[in-house]
Image (cartoon, rainbow, N blue to C red; front, side, top):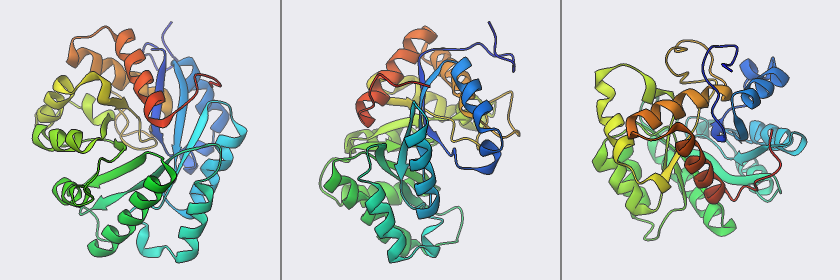
Length: 272
């Protein structure tokens, strides 16, 4: 039976990147979770971008079955962060509901944080993730080359995910060689021909390195573009990804769920 928005549910799917602390989702939090469950979403990784909202997603994960947390300071928020904020994130990272470090990374699209400061904060996150043996959730906008260079300089594989991947095949190959998974969000469903290189990556990527996400409330998939996104719509992206790869949607859903559980060490239970 279609969901209230008219798209077909797909199960099991995991939304590996949702900003559940955002007011647009918190305003109807119970409804957001209920709609996700009805769409076939079994688990969600809630993402922190500051010390304060990292604490909030940890609290949400601790009190809602099927939710898990990633804690970190987004590169565009790093300019406001203090050493005390970092200490708080490092302490939160040791909590039982925390499955990843991030969202961290680099961003040349916005100019809130000087780039060298972004690189310094990114290095902190990478070190913490390595020390705690947790995957890292990586953001990159208009700077995948810079990010790849910084990761290569580590001289070791990086366990984690390049979230909301939007690059080309050469960039995807470099990230795969570094050890990362790639995650697809609503952009994969947009009709822009400029995104054909992204669909080419989605078709060619090894199946065991693919994740799916909403990045909600951002990047709502077609035909919901322009509206606040929510975890239920990860099913829309998953079906488009299956179409691009010529796969049965159920098989694609199960494969990406298996990948997410393996990367983030998620249990099969509890679910939403």
